Amino acid sequence: MLMPHHADLASENRALLPRRKHFLINWSRSASTLLLTACTLCYQGVQAAPSSVYLDDLTWTEVRDTLDAGTTTIIIPVGGTEQNGPHMALGKHNIRVQVLSGRIAAKLGNALVAPVISYVPEGRVSPPSGHMRFAGTISIPDDAFVAVLAGAARSLKQHGFLNIVFIGDHGSYQTQMKDVAQRLNREWSTSKTRAHYVSAYYRAASDDFTQALRARGLPGDQIGTHAGLADTSLMLAVDPTRVRADQMRVSSGTTGPSSGVSGDPAQSSAALGRIGTDMIVDKSVQSILEAIAARPH
Image 1 (tube, rainbow, N blue to C red):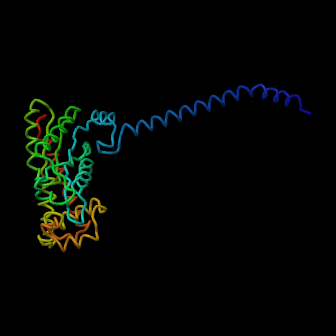
Image 2: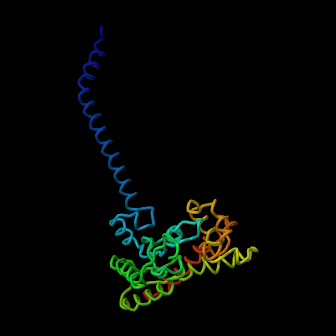
Image 3: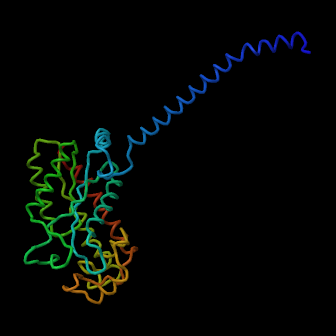
């Protein structure tokens, strides 16, 4: 039998049970609401700060917000679709310029990268000349290429980008990129937007990298000018899956106009290629910063 004071406590507890239950239910609902809100804010925070520098990876609202936050520099990378000997994929220029542009943008810290322009002039189509003599190469007329460059730049200016940077992985259209940038700057003379042709990218990939390889005792006929040791090493450093290792010695043994190879790729390596890619990125970043600093504000 319960003592009188125990009976009073039991009665009081029974009276409190509904209130306790009501409190626990409300507390559980409040905690769930707070957790949901926190998760939503966290998700929105991730969405508001996209990690990719590539325009293709972003939504239009993410691009808008990135512009509003002060990222007003964009790189237009130019590649090309051409033969690169029996051992290297046709997309060499496109793959290389996309990856290295991403590294350049990341190092700048306030830049994005537009989609690669992969259709470029590669020589006469009919009768074929140069790289067009090899299956898979694509060539477009000069005026079409220039129109695409200018159209892309004007589009990006319309959205609010202030520094539009042209870099190209191929030697044949460097003059055209420079001419387009100059023409756009005349057109935009009363605007804050400027086009910048950055020659440092291609100079580093060709002249500077070649000098660095020569300083390591490698001969010019091995370094080459197209699909040789220098060119192949750069590709190995960027994406080795695009190089057919079992064909490198085949290319080495058939170097010349009939093979599409100038140089000897047999001793190519990713380690040598990284010397060149680091040089390309560093020199491009420096040149872009100098160009931006020099433009009228």
